[in-house]
Image (cartoon, rainbow, N blue to C red; front, side, top):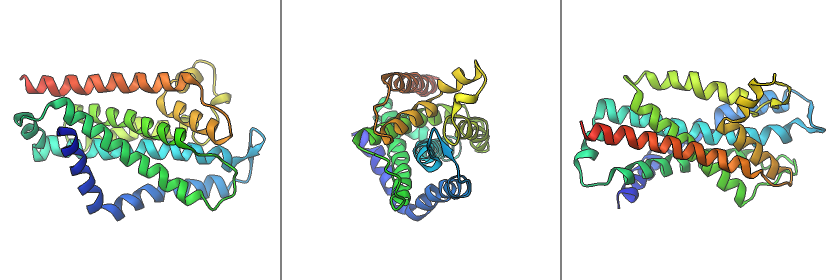
Length: 243
């Protein structure tokens, strides 16, 4: 019941801010598509650059949508509204509260990715997006939901969330195989970037879009991040409850 209650809250929030959420999911990715995809007429790996760019933008949208949905709201609720204190005093199991937050953030990220797919559907690229692509988008959103949740517990003020976006989300947006391939990066640095979750999500979605199959290694890495940051979030919230 705790999971359903959190998801119902996220659903009501989504309906209330539907236009704001949709416009937020559209504007930045659409600008990237216009500037990089249409403004720069080039190829990548022998294919039109748009064929490389669109899967990366989709993966990036799931990341930013999920992270912002959780990190900002949880920081606000924890620091100012004190809603987290009320949750801890309620009979709701804390693991259900965290699970509901992660699923809600994942769905928000998935929505952002689907908006991009809808916007790019008139472009005849021949890219393939199927149920496995949707699952990877959801999984990537879950990873960044847990990252956002963990960082929200570290925030000392509401201003910390934009800083985390600048320090973590923005660098990953440009480095992690979204706009440009990591193949030309220096050895050592390239391997580190390849281990980041957005790199793996972009690789897997791009492989499916090209008619191939994603590497199992990508799922292992994403699930590893999901487990680690889920445990970190659980540790934070149970530690606070036991104080």
